[in-house]
Amino acid sequence: MATLSNPRGLLTTVVVVLLGIAVAGGTLLWRQSVGAPTLEIDRSPRVVGRVLEVEVHARAQRGRLSTIRVVLEQGDRSHDLFASDSLKTTEATIPIPLRLREAGALEGEGRLLFYVGDDFWRPRGESPEAQLVLPVLVDLTPPPLEVRAATRYPEPGGAGLAVLASQGATEIYVEIQGHRFRAHPRGDEGLFVSLFAVPLDYDGQSTAVAIAEDEAGNRQRVELPAVIRARAMKTGSVDLSEEWLARRLPDLLAEDPDRVKEDVGAAFRRVSIDLRAEALRKRRELSEQSDDQAQWKGSFRQLPNSSVLSGFGVQRTYRLKGNTLDEKVHQGFDLASVRHARIPAANAGRVVWAGPLTIYGNAVVVDHGLGLLTLYGHCSSLQVQVGERVERGQILALTGATGLAVGDHLHFEVIVGGLPVTPLQWFDRAWIESHIESVARDGGVDLRS
Ligand SMILES: [Zn+2]
Image 1 (cartoon, rainbow, N blue to C red):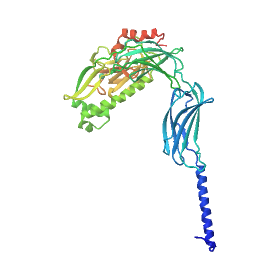
Image 2: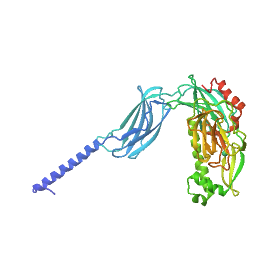
Image 3: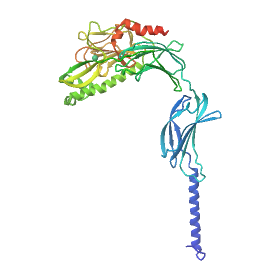
């Protein structure tokens, strides 16, 4: 130990103590200088509704995140929307539902304030909080919505029409059992038409609902005055040969023929699951881009002089040597005529697909407007191009057996908003008049202007 009798020792002690004080002081100063956590939000909407879902991303510079708070300030009123003190990580992405209406928010201007703090110890106590300010306009009123007319008895696997009136909505659609059918604007008086379909696998309970959403996410729901009854499935079976499967599947799957031959049943199931899913996506995508005006006129034409090999909505069992490979619902009509028969457009419209389309082989898809499409599959050669306008009866292609087809035939589908519907309704002029055209007139709209 240092004593007065040892001046060098004393000096060393003083230097050590001073150094200690300097290090401690430096640490304190550094601790005090560590900044607040960083804070970001995933979106900054201008207009907010009853509930705003926002994702907050925060990162502590030192220590761990501790508290997060969100407050809405409106004039001299302040509404606590969210608070949590259980973060306990250095970095976090937190989805936060802000329930503005429940918290008593008023309509009008306001400021959303986001705060995040950490548990890092600083000598002067109080930790700095990160703060983010978002000026918003609070809108709690859902847009008005009225059903002017609707098809009274739509059937599973069939179509219907609804005429809707709304103002100030950004999205208007009809929804049935999770399927959405976009409404198309008609004139400038806030009228809309939605051509919808009841799914073939209708659950017997879901109702058809019209929905209008505004920019703030406020939703208005009105049930359509429609009565839907479930229906029984028809069944049928298709016997496949090993030789046919080994010949067709490698191309469809873009796989090595030897791999397909090892287990043709498994290869068939791969085609059935993957390619059908892709076909479904494609149909939905093409329906989404459909024209706002109805292009069709009168009834839809069937392939001339053809017989129906397989009808719509038949639950088909695919068999190989008596064993079930797969079960699928047939989504169109299989029509057989002579080999390489000329396929006329069922009605007027615009070609939106002309080329290979998964299980359908060479296919043509025509858009008739309002989300209504016709699909022509298994063609041998195509005679139209994408973008071309076609008249009712104009030749689109020749029949064939491309894709997943046993023998030369036309696979014909009618699609509404991505869902297949029975072509029988559209072959029938009286049905179109009573279930679609007259509903439009009752609702005061013209489908073609
Ligand atoms: Zn078919």
